[in-house]
Amino acid sequence: MDKSIIIVGLGPGDPGMIPLRVWEVLNAGMPVYLRTAVHPTAEWLDRKGVAYRSLDHHYQQADTFEEVYLHIAQEVVDAAGDKAVVYAVPGHPMVAEESVRLVLDLAARQGIRTGVIPAMSFLDALSATLGLDPCKGLHIVDALQLGEQQPDPRVGTVVTQVYDRMTAGETKLNLMEAYPDEHRVTVVRAAGIPGQERVEQVPLYELDRLPWIDHLTSLYIGPLTEEEENGEDPAEAGQSRGAGEDAVYKCSFPLDPLVEVMAALRAENGCPWDREQTHQSLKQYLIEETYEVIEALDEGQMYKICEELGDLLLQIAFHAQIASENGRFDMNDVVQAITEKMLRRHPHVFGTTHVANSQEVLINWDKIKAQEQGEQTKPPSCLANIPRYLPALLRAEKVQAKAARVGFDWPDYTGALDKVYEELKEVLQALENRQEAAVAEELGVSSQHLVNLARLLHVEAEGSLTGTTNKFIKRFQYIEGQARQNGQELSQLTLEQMDQWWENAKKIKI
Image 1: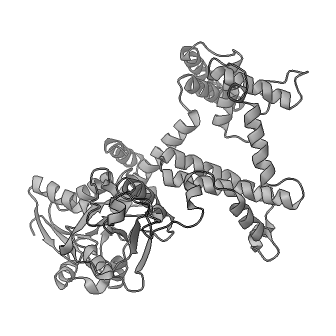
Image 2: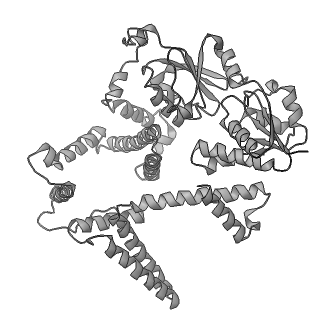
């Protein structure tokens, strides 16, 4: 058979909506590629014995959806190099399917014939669920393209591909530029799928608070009312917020509700697990939540940062509640103590002290801290009080930064770079002499000088290593994906084969 690609739609998710022509193509014996198996129809195909290859691995290997769709399209087109293949996607192939557009474009450039067999789209199911008539005006935008596709507040708008709460958070922020925060929006999950469909109407500002949002979720936004277009208060138009909501956006929400929840969880009739916890048993969760905040900060997703900061705050409230039960301190004491500390340690803001730059701020901070600890009569080590349990790279950076504050530092990075070369030579010498203890020690010293070099170059060593580790994981996952596609186990591969795929991963910017 000539090389060709038949692109088919699988409908919105109910197997009963798969067209007969599509079903015939799926059973024609041609290789079938599914953009994603994370779809109700895929489970039904499994039960019916339809063989297919899922392309979900691309979602783990690429950084953006644009890269995902490009890699998927490339794999489908490559597969059609000498035969006919079927590419199946959820819904209608030509509705909100960027990968299909890319497949058609790449195939045309390579002279590969294509055909498209339509199916019922999610828009059809959504219109039936909400009773919409598209002929009365319906604007459709992609949640992932809201920076380029502006909604039209004058007509009803459907927002596609609201994949998760993170995407919902970004969508909300973009939509708030065109709609009032309190504008009512309708969130629909799994439209047209029996037993899975869910519909809920919420104010726009609450969009990303729905815990059940997933890859089957779309959003319908009704047109602005006359009152909203005239800029009138939504409360006067019958769309008032709940009590206390204004306080949330003025950043003056009290901690009392959280403290009361923790007290209830720890009470006699509360949660058995929460009641069993101690300061010691909670340490691991405090560490985990801290690292999740750091991960969210690295990703730069505002919704995720907000959520992870809340999880971290919960740990603080948990410890304060346990201490309160033991008569030690409570949340009020925690807030009061840190507030007073910040006032004391910023005399250049809340007092009469003058500072010339941020370096002087840090020096004053250390002096005030020493006075608070009653150590002014005996000068403490400037390296005291650096937590022993910090990650090694972060602790090394803090030690060197503290020493640098009192002048123990290189004038610039060149001195630290020379020390890196010097210590690496000593590592090689220890290796030649087969001195295992010396190798370990010299590697540690070399690492310390690398951290110092990074500091002088204004590079965060911990973050830099985390970034390269994440990149290693993605590239290794690419190797795993290639092995799966070729029906091989990693243990069967030669180092040369894995290295080749590693280089391929680098070429496609993984």
